[in-house]
Amino acid sequence: MKRVLFSMVLLLITSISFAQEKNVKVAKKIANEVTPDFTKAEQLIKEALVNPETKNDPETWNVAGFIQRRISEKQMEKAYLRKPYDTLKVYNSALQMYNYFLKCDELAQIPNAKGKIKNKYRKNNTAIMISERPNLINGGIQYFNLNKNKKAFEFFSTYVDASSNPMFKKENFLEKDTILPQVAYYAALAAIKLKNYPAVLKYAPYAKNDKEVGKYAMEFIATAYKAQKDTADWVTALKEGIQKYPDHSFFFGHLIDYYSNNNKYDEAMQFADDMLTKNPNNTFYLYVKGYLYHNMKDYDKAIEYYKKTIAIDPEYAEAYSNLGLIYCLQAQDYANKTTADINDPKYKKEQAAIKKFYEEARPYYEKARELKPDQKDLWIQGLYRIYYNLNLGPQFEEIDKLMK
Image (cartoon, rainbow, N blue to C red; front, side):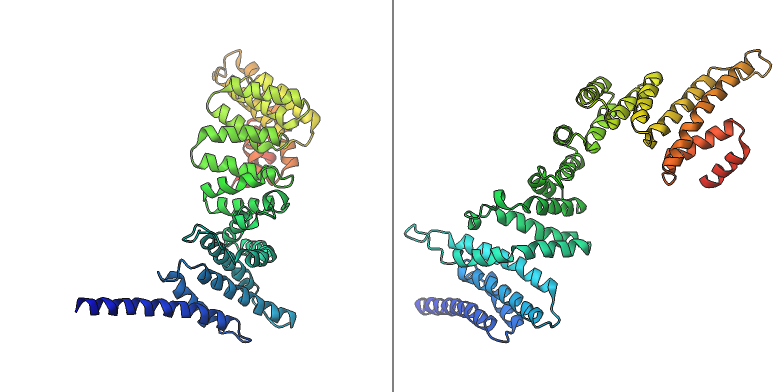
């Protein structure tokens, strides 16, 4: 009795296995018809992809990729005939085809019982995938423009990941594909919007040497380390960014902020001096040195370097704003030490000195306003304070209205 039951179980398993293998063949046949029923073909192949009897067979994944290829072909036939077609369907079919063919190749590379590899799929599938690579970029761009960053990331990351797959060893995409760094940049950009920082750190390095987007890719790397609270690697990334892209202010500015916020002024000043030695007329470096002296409350030195900045670049609004701020700070510091007694003989003299600081501050804040009228944070608070202390009624009223 047990033997009979065991035989029945074997027959049942065998019949299920044959059924799934048949599904794979039928799915391929349907997809190959002149007017394919892709819904039916996809349904059959999806069952086979998860069934234990067929999910580890490379043919199953090959047929799944073939179906996606046929879906794309049918959409492109409509395009050739100038009929309405679904562009996103073409792109998504390319993406799914890649995933299926990559899995097919992975399974086909497993040695057989004799230790031999017989991969009959690679040559044909590789050629198809190479022809479809542009659609991975197109699909990524389309979804990125639709602000669907998760989907865009799938396309861009698949393009980059596939480039190092053994299927494309002869093509050597990592070295010969000149577009790869920019696709990797967009993968990192989509990842950073998704706050997927490990993915940023995976894809941004591909792009860090690119002339067009390299500096931004390195920004992403630094930002990802900071977001993950990895201060050591964040500082290292900023220093690397400065060396590779010294004219890109992001790295230098953030590094100086780090030193300044952690009271490492000696290190910050040394770094600023090193950069100025290499480029003594770089206005950003001069401005930063003024900023450091400013934070150290060495106002005379700060004024010196801010003035050097605007001597080279008369439109450096931030330097004008900070000059105005320093004179206002000096006025406040001086006022804190003066007498409040109007009968004191020193009172008038001290008030005149305070007024002089505000008078010196005024043209710098007004210049900042002239240069950047829309960036009110550079001048509105300063001018409010100056006009109030100088009793400039009409000017004060105008600023007061702006602040409200």
